Length: 197
Image (cartoon, rainbow, N blue to C red):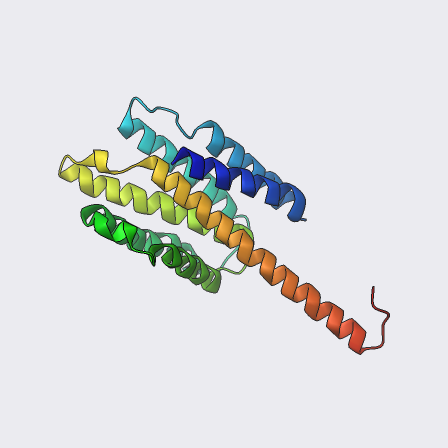
């Protein structure tokens, strides 16, 4: 699991350094990735402490990114709604682990991330919503399993890896959208008679 996490984290670091133009988003993303990489295996001797610590980090950075732009009143309910759905899927996959090996699970991440893009327009808000969804869903799952004294079933390494993968997919979609806008802009300027640059 560590290899997957660090591969995605370093890939996101390279994307943030070389391909993100907005300084604030670049700085925030590099700070988040640095904190995630430094605290990935922190408090490994206390599983409960590790869950609370990583959930707190995700909530802190997710809230920071999500409220950086003022939004409609109803948009502030999306993290709670998506957290309930995340917890339901998480509980289902933990109780029935055979579905984790199903080939379509990777595509499910693409569907969820594209669903986030429908409700929130800016990339910072999308990343923040994704982090809040992961934190809330993991916390709800942890609370439900703690009622049955099975809180050891929640693995924070899986949670952090999934959140990094989601940010990777969000930035991939954002990059494709930027490329499409750039191509449209060039076509529009060429059609007006401007010189192709």
